View 1 (cartoon, rainbow, N blue to C red):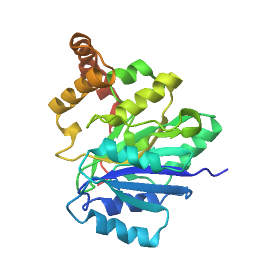
View 2 (spheres, rainbow, N blue to C red; view 1 turned 90 degrees about the vertical axis):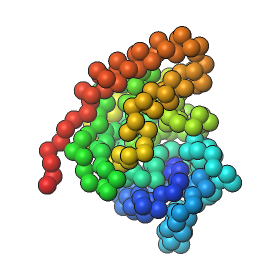
View 3 (tube, one colour; view 1 turned 180 degrees about the vertical axis):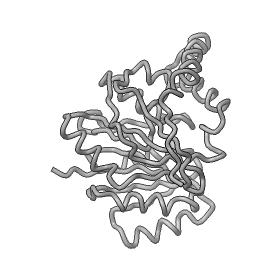
Length: 259
């Protein structure tokens, strides 16, 4: 049976990338999907670009927040509007490979699994490959994820029949990590599809490009999402830094240049 997949896409001043992102969804070999784009008060041409796609493809819908509120709020509204059994996430600057959804839906069906994620590759702002593939442990446990987000948000798919609709935290950054922590807390272990199925765009202004900001936002997660006191949060940050600096690099593989 072909179940509907709801694709959650927040956007903000995405005129450079949103068309390519939407086309990567339209190019999916799995065609039973809806793409819900919620815009966070963009001031560029994002809305007009998306409108052109909506006119030609009824599977794409577009909504706007009344005030700039952050990606978490935009994702929450999209999740509330979702009609699909499966929820998938794709930010407005990232890309999917054509076989992405089909492989993940097949994996979920064949393994009777409620959650799926995969490896992914990195590209720069222009879309050029950085020749890096981000992988994950073959058996990802909750506590591994607790100290480092091994799940690329652009690859995650979960089953609402099993989890319900998972609310997105209103913390302004790192909401995706909290979603996957909620997932792993319930199922305990997850296995990645050992294929690269998406392209993550590394931008100069992204959180991941600033290690110090990443540390700050992770500390906020421990304090506000887990409600730990300062001392416990600092202890958790020691584990996070060890995993980030020592363990995580083992899962980032250099690829041969395609040039």
